[in-house]
Image (cartoon, rainbow, N blue to C red; front, side):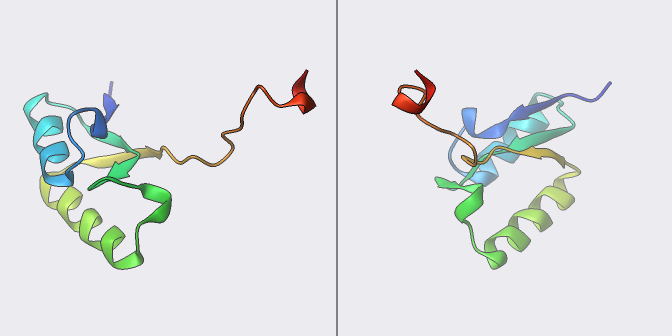
Length: 79
């Protein structure tokens, strides 16, 4: 069994996120925010930097926690 978690629950900082995942013996993370920025808004260069850090730490990304599809359920369209 592999165990993953939302790393930004531990810290906004990616290095601290990686540290928390390793300390808790997790296999990887569900990446949502990196250094306080939602994963859907980081640059290609930042994504490559994060990928290297995760590879170096032996961690995998299970899924991406993006805001895509989030809607306000209070809208009249759903009443």
